[in-house]
Amino acid sequence: MSAAPARAGWRFRQPSVIPGFGLTLGLSLAYLTLIILIPLSGLAWRSASLGWPQFWAQATDSRTINALSLSFGTALAAAAVNVVFGTVVAWVLVRYRFPGKRVVDAMVDLPFALPTAVAGIALTTLYAPNGWIGSLLAPLDIKVAYTPLGIVVALIFIGLPFVVRTVQPVMEEIDREVEEAAATLGATRFQTITRVLFPGLAPAIVTGFALAFARGVGEYGSVIFIAGNLPNVSEIAPLLIIIRLEEYNYPAATAIAAVMLIISFAMLFVINMLQSWSRKRYG
Amino acid sequence: MADPVVFAAEATPSSTAGITEQRPARWALMAVAFIFLGVFLLLPLMLVFMEAFKKGVGYYVSTLGERDTLSAIRLTLLVAAISVPLNVVFGVAMAWAIAKYEFKGKAFLTTLVDLPFSVSPVISGLVYVLLFGAQSLLGPWLKANGIEILFAVPGIVLATIFVTFPFVARELIPLMEAQGTRDEEAAISLGASGWQTFWYVTLPNVKWGLLYGVLLCNARAMGEFGAVSVVSGHIRGQTNTMPLHVEILYNDYNATGAFAVASLLAGLALVTLALKSLLEMRYGAEIAATRGH
Image 1: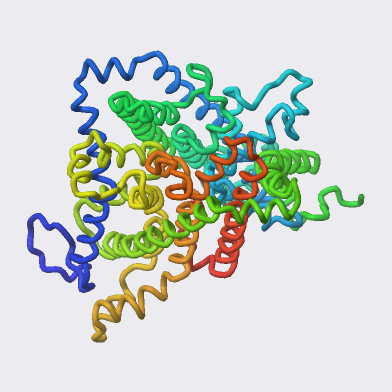
Image 2: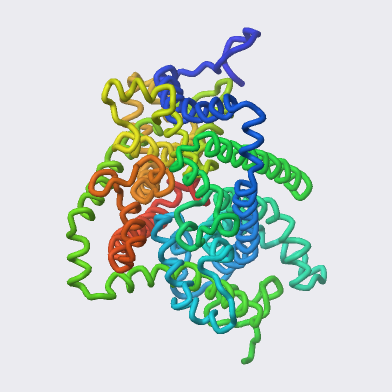
C-alpha cells in the first residue's frame, strides 16, 4: 500500500520522508572504508603480490600447516564440548528454578567481559601441575597446561557463551503445548526431547557451534599462556603470525593470515547453508 | 512424599508433570551445569583475586602504584576514551542508515559491520602493520613526515576501533529496525527537523540499547589483547595497555603483580556484567533485540 508513484525502473533506495540518508550513509561508508575495507584489502593485495608459487610455499610450510591444523582442530574440539555442556546450561537456565539463578545467568557472559589475557593467566595457573586443578590431575598423569589439551580448555572458556546465548532464546520460545501433545500421545520424556524438542533447537545449536568455532580459531590472548607454544606441537596459527612478523617475515605472516581468513569464511559460508537447510527441514 | 512431582524449587504446577524431567534427571542436569560453570568460569575468576592478594594488601597496592602500571592504566583509559565515542557516533549513524531506509546493498553493509567479529584479533592488528609498517606503501612516506602510527598510540586506537566497532551498531540495528520509522515520520510531519527528530524521538527510544552497546564496547576496548599486542611494540611505560602489562609482568615471573593488574580488569568485567544484567532486568523490553548477541 505504498504511496510511492508507480514509476518503474531501478531505484537505489525507497523513498522516505526521514532526512539524513546521505549524511548517515556517507559517514558509515567513510568509516567502514577507512577502518575495515582499506586495511583488509591491504592484506588481500599483499598476499596477491606474493605471487602464487611463493604464497603456496609459505602456506604449505610444515610449521604453518601444523599451526593451522592445531588451531582448527582445537577450536573444533572445544566447540563440540561447548555444544553439549552449553545446551545443558541453557536448558537448566530456561527450565529450572533455583536460588541465585540471575547471578548464574549473568556469569555465563563472563568470557565476553573478561579480557582474554586475564583468562589466559588464570587458566594457566589453575591447570599448571601445581595449580588447583592441575595438582588433582597430575596423579592421573593428565597434563593440561602447556599441551594442546590446555588450548582446548582455554577455547572452551572462550566459546561457552556463544552456544548458551544462541540456544537459550530459542528454548525460551518453545511452545510447551508441543511437549504436552507429545506426552499425551504417549511419548516418553526422552522421546519428546530427542524427537520433538531437539529438531527445533538444531539450527540454534549449529549456529552456536559455528560462532564458538569461529571465535576459537582466531583466539590468541587466552591461549598463548596455557599453550606452551612449542613449534609444531602447541603453536597456534595466530601466534605463528606474530612470530613471523617479529622476524620481519611479512610474506609468511600475510600468507598464514590469508589462509586463515579463507578457511574461516568458507566454513562460515558452509555453516550458513547448513543452517538454512536445517531451518527449512525442521522449520 | 504424597505427590512425586512436587519439587521444592520447581514452580511448574503438577498438571504439567508429564512435560518435565524426572527428579533424578533434573538434579543430574543441574549438577552437570553447575560443575561445568564452576570449573570453567567461577574457579578462574576466584583465582584471579586470590592470587592478586597472595602477598598481602600492601604488596597489591604497591604493585598498582608502580610507574609502568600507572602508565598502562592511563593508556588503557585514553584508548577507550578515544575509540568508544568514535564507535558510538559512527555506530549510531550506521544504525540510522541501515534501520531507517531501504536501499540496495544494505545486506552487504550489514555483513561488513559484523566482519571484525569473524576475524582473528591478531589479523586485525596485522592488517594495520601491513598498511603502515616500514615495508608498506605508506611506511616510507609516514616516516619522512615524522608521523608515528605503528608502535604508538594511533595504531593502538585504530586496532581497538577495528575490534570494537560492531558492538554499538549491532545492538542498535535490530532495535531500530524493530521500532520502525513511524515515530520519526510523525515527528517530521509535525514539523520537526531531522536533528530534532533524532534528539527528541529516536535517541530516547534507543537510549538503553545504546548504553548496553557502549558497555560491551568499552569492556572489549579496555580488555583487547591480540590486536593491540601486534601494533603496540610493547614499549614499557609508553605503548603498554593494561592487558599487555599483565603479559609482561607474567612473563617476568611476577605472577602476583600480573594478577594484581588482572584483578582490576576482572573487576571491570564484573561491573560490566552487573550493569548489563541490571539493564536487561529493568529495560529488557527496550533492549529486547539485543538478547543473545
